[in-house]
Amino acid sequence: MRYEIRVEGHMSETLTKAFPELDHVLMSGQTLLFGHVMDEAHLYGLLARCRSLGLRVVEMRQLPE
Image (cartoon, rainbow, N blue to C red; front, side):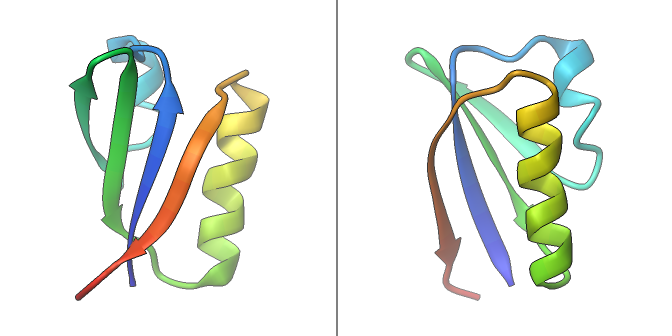
């Protein structure tokens, strides 16, 4: 499964390194994390990582394969 997680604000290089399995793009006032997610447990782990780092998830969606 491929997912996109849109986070409020521009993430620093240090923060993006906390998500080595995802690519990222900085957009107008947001950071877009995207990539392959193995399963539901991995997805919840990514969201927990966002929460623990104080990141506000604006949108999350599954992308077509």
